[in-house]
Length: 264
Length: 44
Image (tube, rainbow over all chains, first blue to last red; front, side, top):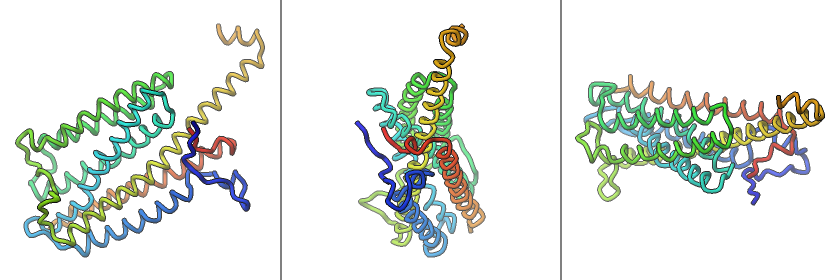
């Protein structure tokens, strides 16, 4: 089955080369513009409009980027990696293999944001940047696991075997996310429990709006980054295949002597 | 109270996002130039 991910056909006024000289498309341009607008609104509401919290003061503003970053990487990015890994192991789909890798890389960036903003929020709130609390420790373990996943994807070995190993690691790494999710319930933790309970939220309306804006802005930015990262992975895959074809053609043109020499 | 943590937090997040986004665009353009047009499609 052939599925077009970037439906940007060459128009009458542009040649095909002009149409696809980058990883951008109409969809990514619209998504990029929406992301920029939502980020601008997030900065305005998160830093200026929303009020300081009674106990935490202005440091509560980190909430609007810390929790959305965690939601994006833990619930969206690594779920895509899990689904992509499972599908790849079932039917060796190149699309899902590359998508799993793209989502993992962008997810690691957002997980880094979660850790850094959490540390910056922890200092004024808990009095320390870091403590070996179950939630923090399990999050740091996930960061290392997904870095390992990305390292496996860069191993210089047979592409199929490499993708299979990465897929297995992508599935195993997801298990730790369950530990992160329930760590605050399973162990006595310094980290607060569920931030928002939809049935009983006591958050100021402006704060709630800023938080929702944060989730929207970072989710759209994540989507934009993943699409571009996927297309880069696709181009790299094509380039690798092209180089292999060239190498085979070169060997073939050398004739039986060349093949015998090359195979020795 | 707390701005000394808030400002670096926002700067790191949106600064890194900007650098990462620009690096992806440049990398995509560079790779596209190395392939013939018919192979620049994103197909499965």
